[in-house]
Amino acid sequence: MANMKIKASARNGIVKCKVMMKHDMLTYDQAKAKGTEANFITHITAKAGGKVVLDMSTSQFLSKNPLIKFDFSAEGLKAGDMLEMTWTDLSGKTVTESKEIKGL
Amino acid sequence: MERRKFLGLGLTAAAVLPAILNAKDFRAEKPDTWTAQKVDAAIEALYGKITPVEEGVTVQAPKVASNGGAVPVKIKSDIPAKTVAVFQDANPEATVAVFDLSEGGIVDYSIQIKMKASGTITAIVEGKDGKFYLGKQSLEVALGGCEG
Image (tube, rainbow over all chains, first blue to last red; front, side):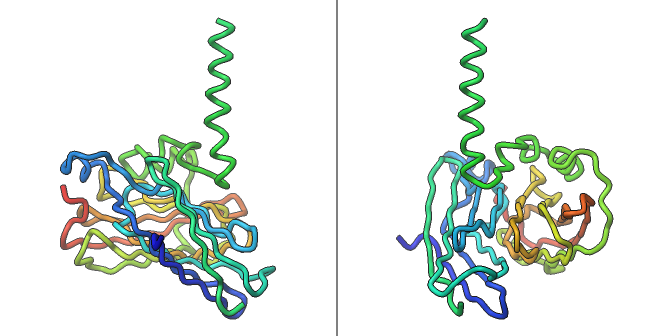
């Protein structure tokens, strides 16, 4: 399922990641106007090599199909390690996708 | 009464469990933060009463954002940080996101946020030294992003 677009590449000991998640991110206001339930991503976690590298609690004010960029130290990672992204939304749905980190 | 207490305990245990699966779920831990309408109130709900120093945190955003539905915001800091929180004062609620940093985490985040009107984005960095640092950026929004 192409729910996320993940790009991760290591250079000079730092892994740069770009992740785009497909999600409507309906705020309470928007949901009211449309007559549906509000639904938005509430938690995003990223893991690499068994370690948590990004952990964010989010509110409805991330944009639709939110794009996040983040960096972390490549220490302790080896070639072939994956970046594993997980998000959870308000309805309890959880999606996990992973992609190999390039350039390790 | 005894039975009532027992049931209550069960509920608390169930509420704590997801917080362990995620490294730290600020939604479960500090629910008041997410409903606070003012930036100050949200900060207080998250960190308690603090007096952040206004230095060392860069918040980058366009001076004029054409589309309030996706305002690119960049938060950068060289301070060794424990947590980073992002707030704005244009939307009904103030809190946008709270990052929990692990070891080797670098404070260099780009996110896209919605803004209903022109306002100020505030970022607070909780340093490992226990101090709080603050960065601000005001911007104008040409077209509101919350669609009413």
